[in-house]
Length: 433
Image (cartoon, rainbow, N blue to C red; front, side, top):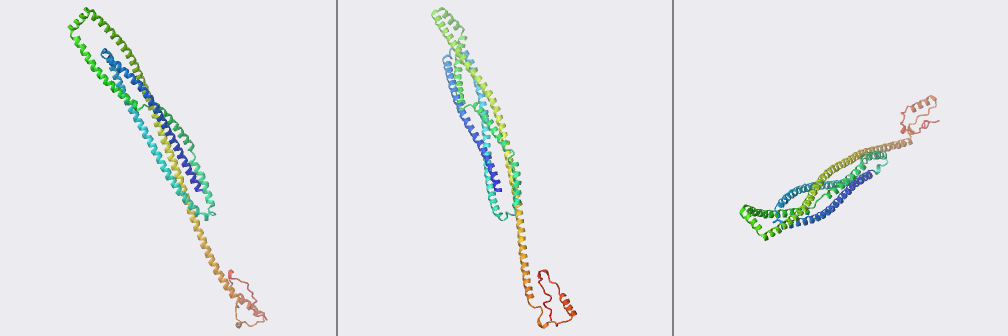
């Protein structure tokens, strides 16, 4: 019965560990799905990157063709680019925070893997202990074969007590905890799926940084060229005489006037085109601003999900502590079983001592019987021999008084013990006439 119960305990421990391993496999499968979704997000980011690159290239071309004719819109572009740089810094800061959170989650996953490894080691130690107990029980069973008849009642009582104790301790909360574990891993999978939808690839980040650097360089070049153009205009404005002469000369000369009007019309057309392009750029920047705002909202949701993950990890630790408590209960049951086993061993030793005492008493009784048989044999030999020789025979007494004296003398002998009594004929030794 002890071997069977230990076998049941080992099977239950193995089932628990198998369930724990299946949950680990499910978590790893979820991680693979997350990686696949990250790859899909990276592809989408690359497509968005290509569109942004095209827009930036078009923007650079337009700026390169019209930076000499237009000076006022450059300030607006400069302000917009400053805002872009500011948003870029915020974006980098938020990405750094996200990476820090992801590193923390990875560390927590590594800690859970280490805890699983420790549990597996404990399982191996538990199996070794169970094997040693099984061997000890086999040896004990071999030794108790000779005493089965005497210990049937004690074993029946022991088996009934163990059957009443084990189900109350081990099978009380296993079903509820398995349901809690399944719910925990479902919630973890949902949260991880939400997190994967909000991830951004590292390549997209690098490309955006490089583009912003290029735009900063081009803006510096445009600023230098704009400064030169402003200096020329200022120089012309300072030279008042030359300016008035130039204007009156154009009025006097009709040819120069026509050229001036044509150039003025061309400049107006260019300005109108440039304004259209600026409107397009404003729309694109507004879209970027909206995307950044959406990203911030998603980041807030992601933080909420991370908090939920933290709560789930706490619940996981609580479940782990519950399993540890169950393991301690099982150990206590095993210790109690060992104590009972030691108690029964002491009883067995006492029974063996009593059996030895009975054997010694039997040997003593045999010795006493042998001695008594010897004594009986000697008495029989004596009874067979005559008590008195013929030389010392009494004379025949004819009178009744003399006969009565003989009877009195005969009955005056001491009475023998019950073990030495034999059939005795009182008239055998009388002298008959």
